[in-house]
Image (cartoon, rainbow, N blue to C red; front, side):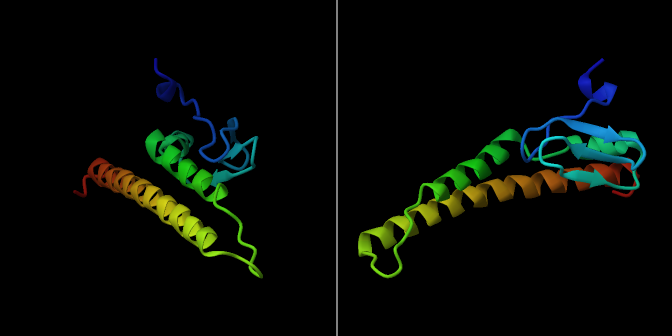
Length: 124
């Protein structure tokens, strides 16, 4: 039996923390950052929704974009030079290109989930 068949939860998509199902609130919560998924779904569907997420490459792309921006220079607004502005602009453009690719992948995953749900409900 696979992990999905057993109803096991993937780690938190935001911090990587351990997720758990909270029966009394019919929710899934992360022990690390506290993010929660609360819905009127059955436990099985709630777990399926929690585990459905962008592929690892999309998640890694967003993390890479964040890291690019963290490495961008801070400008001294009272005394900055042209090179600093150009480097900041370059880092920002690089990050947005990475994010744009990741968003495309996330949107495709969402579209595929919506299509699968319609097919499951016989609504094609």
